[in-house]
Length: 592
Image 1 (tube, rainbow, N blue to C red):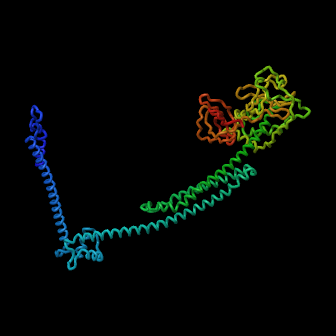
Image 2: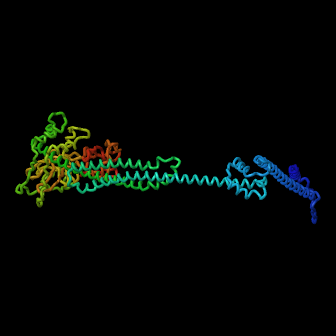
């Protein structure tokens, strides 16, 4: 109330202070002095009294608050004392105002959940009971409580210590079991490493004997090694499961505590298993390379058979003046539009398998052969005769070696026949036969293309440039006057047809057979169509350096800017479209 009254007084003075002041004289005369009015002095004294009243009221409130708190504490203390006295009286069974050791033990057990033995009671009694007293009096209850509290913590510490020792004993047993499990798994790892060592001994000499071992033996050895590696990988997988299962089988409440022990004990096994995987991968690579060498050798043998067998077939067609259609009919005996393996064997059994190559004796050799270095300006002219390109014959060059003869046994023909079948087919279709029978030449030395078989008097159509590809349409036939082999061919790309010199009479080679065999220069995965360059699912990648056979010649996709062709891998017959020239002009596949 006093604080509220002083506030009212202060607010009144602030509101009406200007009205309580004495007014100044209307006119201030020179030399007149102003004096402090009595009203102003009274106002100052009044404000001072108001401040003193506020301070006095504040100090009185603080004193009252302190007195109240003190009274509350005294009341609480009296209440607590009464409760302690009631508790003391509760356990003072004999009402002698002192707790005996028996009474103190009952108090500790029921109120503080602590059991006191004689030794602990003796320690507490020495500090809480004076000499001559019967027991712990009310005034010494705090010492009894302190002693019981200390005893309780000591008992808790002892309990924790016992639990820790028991757990350490259990953990020691678990670690022993863990070591036993690790030893058992280690025995499997050791057995796995021994098996792996046998595999490494088997694959180590493979590459060294790749050139002297037969292809069938190479494939058998590669299969054997692959089987051993597969068995070893399966074993490694099972051992890995055993290693991963080492932490399992223990009480779940100890799993966290065992994690560190498992990491330490199993670390060496983990390192050994990691090395095992690396060694298996290396063995698999060696076996794979050995198998690849065998497949490459088989491909080379099949290619030799193909070259010789098709040369025999073309010789037969040339001798009997057969067209490609008629030659197919000779193979297709039953006329069902496809060639089966029996038809294939029967054809080669019925024809002359010795190639009859025309040879020029030195006295037959003419003095000149067609000049291969024709100018572009000359190639553009249709009027200039080919004999104008003739020059004096150079010094005779050694003739290229004749085609290596291959025994066309049923075994060799069977491998050859299987290699040219379309995927999933059992018979050779007419389209596949035409692809097989057609001959493509790569221009290895520039030479003119003329209108007629005869060199003299024949007009030049165009000059064939280095690297161009031509398709054989007729021949090769011997040109009588120049004594050279000539063939009628079509240029791939512009479809111009004419007669070209395959080989000169002095050993010069202008065209080389096999232009439909290309080499992949950058690893690629075939796609399903010309327009879509997205890799086809299920088809393997064609590796850098792998040889493919062109099925459809390269053409440029104007939309994507890629030059693409359809190919068939010589290694395993994988067929699809690949990019031969990227849109940046980079060559990704080229004529072998």
